[in-house]
Image 1 (cartoon, helix red, strand yellow):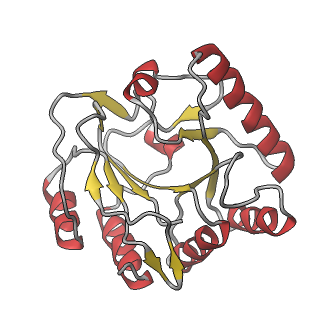
Image 2 (cartoon, rainbow, N blue to C red):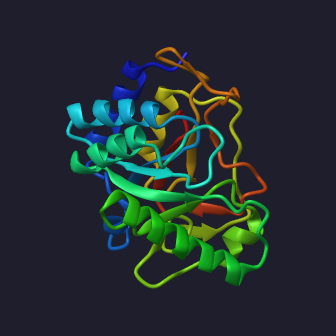
Amino acid sequence: MFSYDDYKEIIRIIKSTKRQANYKDALYRDNFIIMRHDVEYSVERAYALAKVESSMDFTSTFFFQWTNNSYNLLSRKNRDLICDMHERGQNIGLHFALNGMTDMQEVRKQIVKEMHMLSEMLGFEISEFSVHRPSPSILAENIKLPGIINAYQDEFFTFTENIVSFISFNLSKLISLLDTKPHIPHILYRPPPHLSGFRSPISRQPRIAPKNYPYTLQSLCIHCQCC
């Protein structure tokens, strides 16, 4: 059972390390922690988490999908929620879905197109993106675009063949990792499906990036996929 109390504890742990950073800050730092949310199910749920963060003077990056079967990014309500998150200091980006695209030049063009549309729709610049369920080939492509940050670009990730996969993960392990490892693998924090009355379509467990992902972060990026 995932709770806001658990999430607040994670935030407290991160703040205690004094390593919190957004992607732009991390470009100029060797040691950092990034909290990231790929929003795949609910803008309202993301907004609720953003309010928890704001109450603790903490910000993270929320990536929203332009094409999504669970929420309508064009609705007035969702636009208002996202704009309010932005005004509270949260970083907003595009969670790009390939939707079967394999031509890398076309992928690049579509990323720029969707980021431009999202910027126009929301009224502020969108300059960061993450790829939805990236394959090893997409990660290896190391997509870089002028004035745009890719959450998977090589400034944040380094190739490695040694990636450990945890079946379970908990706060005590997170505390231990933050205390003892200056450079640790990319952690995908996937809370169980319950979150204050919401139920995710898929039961998700916290885990280290699986073995078919050949990249790890130079430092730490916590990917909280509970919205």
